[in-house]
Image (cartoon, rainbow over the protein chains, first blue to last red):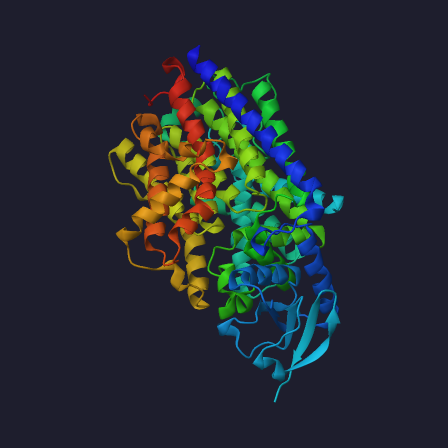
Length: 144
Length: 480
């Protein structure tokens, strides 16, 4: 009888846990319009992801499939940029997206997308601005 | 959200189950109920699909629905006509021989599809004739169903999508769908280190084939996959409790406990689209054959489950080896002789999966330095501090320490086989913590320990309840 009682309590505890997690998920879902987490905490359907999607949707129309694209986030930490690059790659699966500062991809990019701010580094001299997309800037690499 | 794509996901798993059911005569033990048959046939179907996709990649054939349909039909036909009489005899293992005598003609599979109605054992927790294909539905089943539905609702919205789905699992699935194959030329780029190009490819393959069926890469459809795996996990746990001889209350309470706690963690820790569902299912599905005295059907069930583990995640590779090794040791121990046949039956499929994976990963130079490093005991402080903190993870609501139960489950004889595999897998997790050169070990542990615990906890709950809750009189012969 004691075993059943204890097990029943555990089931009850799990049920309450599920309801608590569901309630928390509903609350955060309702508040997703104000979800401005750092890139490691982004979720599908949140404003930062929607902004990135809007930028990349414009780029996808201009770039052929298989194009090597470097993604830069000027002013962001290396860790933040790493997550942003992953999101950009997920949202542009037809192109080959990697980080602009990725040492293993040096010189491979045909295009560079700069998130939110224009590029202002020495290497920008080798890039030709293609245009401003929603929330980002697109450059084409100048090949010798 | 496309209803067509969601339907395609559901249909995909039904088709996989039907494909696996072609091997019913060898995959289902008389002790197995309908739910477990659904589980093991689906896993077998997934393993067959993975091997077919691997062969297509080796042959340079692009994945397409007609090619997959022809391959599936060919395999189903071969199972019936050519392969089965040549490789296996239908003679049941000695412990079942007397029970099965006169039931079926030799070589005739008694279960064409899904296995409903084949030799259910009475006295093992209540599934029997006249009670419907799933036995008597109880309050625990209703709670479990509720938990799966709640998880499914959140999953298909994308709100509880695991970040790793975006970072690599789902991304690779989409790439493979676009490339109509595992895109090794893409994975081989050095800048792709962050997407773990060396990982076994089953998880993205399932996403890619779902996309093929759905006609496009639809995120909610991919999230529904996690729900299907969750449902299979609950089914396997319910069956583990039934086969373990737990009384009806404990079966129902255990099923509900597994489902409610897994759903709570899945929502709270945002686990939809994660590959950890695969390994949680592996542990749970391995419980029934490891609880039973070892037999030939168990060898093949363990082989299929181990192959599924090895194809799913990198930590699934050692788990596969452990499951097979434990099963072989049990056979040797029970029969007091070393026989090659059980080793081949249990080890062939996992070996095929692992060797093909190793060959491809080595050929394309995909292994990374992160995989290798010296054992550094000096990390212990950081690692155990991380474990201590992870054990209080709020999404687990205090249940995470259950993952250490295998250490206690080593003592009762009937759970020793499961506990041995689970304990050694736990040791492997810690071995990785002590050898991977990642830098911040505290963060490293915190970032994955709750997920690793999820792989173990449902099966640990089941085996603990079997020990704790089964009256001795109802325990199968050959167990404590």
